[in-house]
Image 1 (cartoon, rainbow, N blue to C red):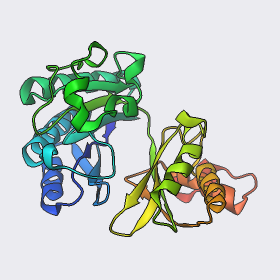
Image 2 (image 1 turned 30 degrees about the vertical axis):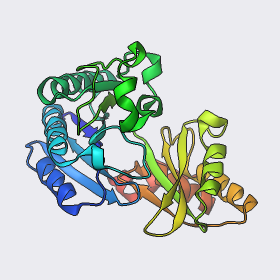
Image 3 (image 1 turned 60 degrees about the vertical axis):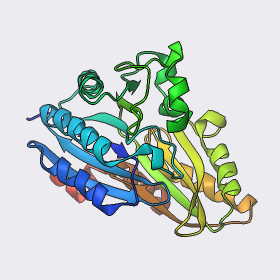
Image 4 (image 1 turned 120 degrees about the vertical axis):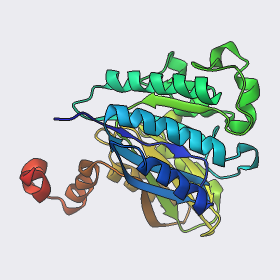
Length: 298
């Protein structure tokens, strides 16, 4: 069976449809790569792409997308709710079929080195590719954002893994790495008060004593005039979507607000969603492999 790797590059553009479509066309042009999904968010001013393909094709696609983004996105003019440090903010590689994490780490290093050498964009490796434990957490890597990176990169602790200790003037810095699948899951609240979303996010995220394997923050969605708890679930098998959802529901009640909806960004493993159905329907003796039609057929 052919090897397959997943790549989910995030770009700091969620308002200009022409730019996002140009990036999509770039992804579609690479042999051996399929663009499965892409979405753009105006409040976050960010787009998330999901690609799958051969290791060789994915290396080329990741580089070409980073190159195209550096040509089309000017970080000196970028504003948005989501933390960011580069035109291509992050490039994670995820093993899908007959791929090991070590192989994805090697891909990330080759891509990172090429980006720095050919595009003059400094690269910091993160997650499984991190050169030190301080760099494994993307939030720590990105702290300071684009505006704070010129000073940050001069510190020995944050010397780029590839490239010079100075940002690209308009494309910033990019984080490249390898990781397991995560679920990007957001919950919308019946309030415009982002302070409430911040308080709820603090209760939910692992770094502040909440749920392990959850990263979260409160954001304001300008186009809808509502607050949102925006999250990444980095291990959905150990901290499920429904666990996060129920905790947010309970915390929201403390502040007199309700959940008015939720959203999934990009793709998610089917088991992450099936687990929610099993929990809320209270299905007894459920067999994921045998009782889900598509899984049984496969």
